Image (cartoon, rainbow, N blue to C red; front, side, top):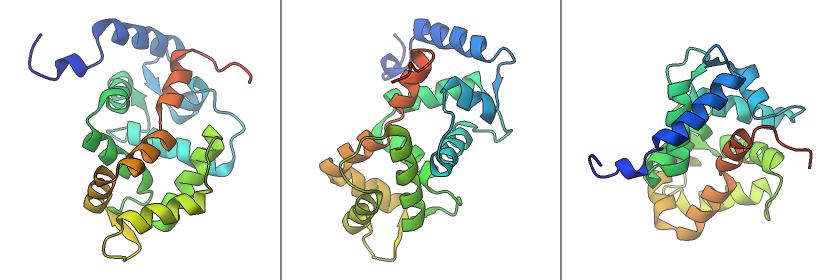
Length: 186
C-alpha cells in the first residue's frame, strides 16, 4: 500500500473489468456522445434529459476533444464512486453550470433537475420546489446565483441537503447501467 487514500482508488481488477467492458463497447478506445448514450442505453430521452446527458458527457470529456477516452472514463467513475465530498461537489457544480460562467442560476439548476427526474424518475418534490429550496438554503447573498464557494459551503453545512443532492444527482445509477451491461426493459 502506498500513500494514504490509495485504498480509495478503484482497484486493478475493477479497472480491468471496466476496461474490458469499455473496449467491447468501444473498440476505438474513444467514446463519442452517440456511443456514450448507446453504452448507457439512453434512447428516446426528453430534450431535457438529452441535454443533461450531453452535459455529463462534456464534464467527463476533460480535454474537450469531443471524445471520452478510457482514462477520462475511469477518472470520472472513480470520482463519482469514491471521490471526496468537495471533489464531488466541484464536479456537480461544473455539471450544473451549463454556460460555464462560474455561477449556477435558478434556470440552470431547474433544467438540470428536470432532466435528472426524466432519467431517474423517482423524486418526492417537483424540480421547482427542489430548486427553490436549494437557493433558499444556500444563496447567502440572495443574488439568485450560486458561486462554487456558496454551493460547496452550503451543501457541506446542511446534511439533509447533502443527502438530497447526492441521492438525486447520483450518477451511480448511470454507472450501474454501465456495469450491468444493457439495461433490461423495466
